[in-house]
Amino acid sequence: MTATVTIAPVRTASQYEKAKARISALMGKSDQRAVDELDILGALVEKYERENFALEAPTPLEAIRFRMAQARLKPRDLEPFIGGRSRVSEVFAGKRPLSLDMIRSLHRHLGIPAEVLIGTGASEPMTQVKEPSAAALQRLRDGAFMRPGESFAGFVDRALGSSQADAFWRKSRTERTSAKTDHAALAGWLAAVRLLADEVSIGSDRRPSAEKLGRRIAKLSVEANGPQRAKAELAKIGIVLVTLEHLPGTYLDGAALCRNDGAPVIALTLRHDRIDNFWFTLLHELCHVLNHIGKETNLILDDLELRSSDEIEAEADLFAQNVLIPPTIWDENKSADLDNDDVDRIAELAGVHPAIVAGRWQREHGDYRRFARSLGRGEIRSQFYR
Image (cartoon, rainbow, N blue to C red; front, side, top):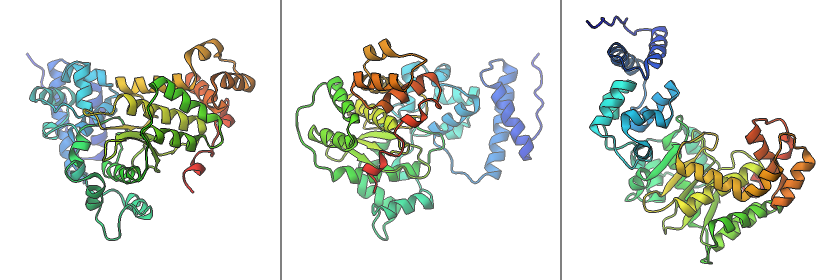
C-alpha cells in the first residue's frame, strides 16, 4: 500500500523557501513516495513563482542549469535522464534538442516544469532575446557601437546579419558561462565584438603548429608591449584579437568565434587586469580557435572562474598551461615552498613573465596571498583601453 503524500499549500515566502529546500532534498531519490512528493512540490513552487515573480520564461537549458545549481549537480549527474556523456554535452552545446523522453525524465526526477522544457532546442536564439539593461545599452551607445536612434534589435541584426544570427547562437557552446548571464547583454557584446573584428586587417602567413605558435606567443609576455605584439603576430597568420570590456550581466573573460568572412576571432574582456590572467586567457582562446571553432561550433564563451566538465574546455586549459610553462620545466621545479627567487628562476627557464609562474602556483595550491604582488596587476588594460 502506497503512503499518502501530505503537503501544505505554498502561499508565503517562508513556505516557498521551505518547499525549495525540500525539493533539493528529494533530488536523486527514486522511490515512488519521493517522486510523487517532488511532482506536487514542483507544481506548487511553479504556481507560486508564476503568481509572485514577473520573470520571463527561461529557455530549456536555463531551466536545467538553474535546477543543477539548486541541487549542486554536475553534468554527469544528468546522464540518467538525458543519456551518455556525449549526449549531455550535445544538449548543453545546443546541438541536440531535448527529446520527449528526456523532457519526461527531467520533469519527473528534477521537478523542472514540462512546459519550460518543451521547445525547439536548448538555447535561446539571438533574434528573440529582449533588450539588455539600461546600463548595458548605455555602454554600447557610449562606445559608438549603436547608431543614434538605432534599436537594439536593429544593432544586433546589423552586426551579426539577420540571416545568420539564430544559427550563430544555436551553434554556440555556452557551458562555461554563469547561470546569471543576461543573454541580451551577451548578444550585444558579441555584436560589438563582431563590428570591431571586421575592422582588423589580417595577413595570410603560414601558421606553425599549435604548440609552436603557443610557445611563440607565450614568450612575448616578457616584453613590455607583449600584448600588442601578440595581437600583431596573430594578425599576420589570419587570427583576429580584439578586446572589449564585458557588459553588465555578462561575466565573461573571453570568447572564440568567427567574423563575417570566416576569419577566427579571439575576444577578451580583460575584466581581471593581471598579467597572468591575460596570457592564460589569450592562450586558452587560441586553443579554441585553432582546434574547436568550425562548421559545427562557431562560438565558444568562457567565464574562466567556472569549472567545466567539457572536454574542449579541459583541452584548452591544458594547452594554455603547458605552452606557458612546459611540463618538463614545471615538474622539475615546482614546490610548495617556492619563493620569489624560485619564481624568477622558473620564469627564466620557461621564457615567460614571472607573473605567469606566480599565478600558476596560486591556482595549484589555492593560496592567493603568496605572490599576490607578483601578478602584474594594472598592467594590461592600459595597453588596450585609453
